[in-house]
Length: 293
Image 1 (cartoon, helix red, strand yellow):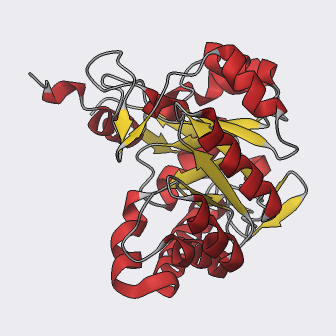
Image 2 (cartoon, rainbow, N blue to C red):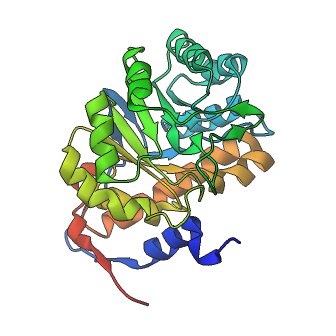
């Protein structure tokens, strides 16, 4: 029987709501939210999360990111889908499911290379069922829990930066760095792992372990610019937003999605100005304080 207390989405929300922010507005300046990632500059550190099979189309989702000047990530879909996505916008990380048939993985990696993708990744958390350790079936496709050797093969098979989604510990982060990944997406995959530690909670210790150059993307419960600020202050380079974008995109298309990303980025700039944070790299983690409600 499902225990509502084990809902990792709710746990993450409670944790983010337990963090308050110290004001440092005296003598502050208007900040910049520009971020440079692997030599490419984006207008915002807020990244559309790796959603899959959106009814309004994945190409429009990428277009919404382009309009907002954001790096984008996309999830499950066919190799053919990728042509439309990358025609709309090439600055996309294609996150690939851990297919049991490795050729399905390599086909998507090759397509991402051909289409000029920003990077590729693998969603390891989606390899097994929620309630046992059996390899999962996702949208009719058989998955397989990848071994370290499998992951090493995938990472070494491509010249593109590789990101692993689902890493959720210092141990996993160090393993991903050892594999040669460019970074990780800290995620419990929308509650797929129950009782999961909030990704934002782990950021300080992971950042200390991996150093400044390993890319950390926080995914899980980021709902607005204030949540994004908390994650960035605690060590994230980028933050992923998924579900909050779904309804605006479904109802208003790429422009509505871009408008919401800009609004979130505006909220981020506002709290940066109120904390003396001149840019994303200079947010002092000491402005974050945990409290008990």
